[in-house]
Length: 192
Image (cartoon, rainbow, N blue to C red):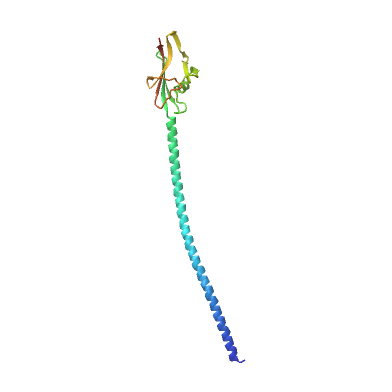
């Protein structure tokens, strides 16, 4: 083989090697470009998701602040309602019929202990008898002053008024509301 043939074979081999390496280089370059484009696309999507996550974080922070405001408002409302319940007050007057009169400011919770009977026993020593048939209490005496008969058709008894009107019910069945005035009056009663 002549040196020219060797150079030709060598040139052919180099040419084949150059073509093959160029093809591989082109293939890997295209893969690299695809990977870079995918990376750029993923990076862009990650940025979008990061923006969405940041917006969600801000929304959650705003919702948390609003929840805190609503919670404070709710607690303030509950506190105001509680204070309204606690501020229910009535005036209870005990008139012994001999010039001695007591005035009591009585606090109570409406719907719990708001009967004339409950308010009276909260400020005075009360002697009473329960009558199941009426579902109520008969007041026998307040602070040591007891009902007493004068004769068979009259006597001195404890009568009570709500807002200056004689009650037509017993003390346990008569409800008291904020601002009411209850007056117990030891007075002469005649029924004959």
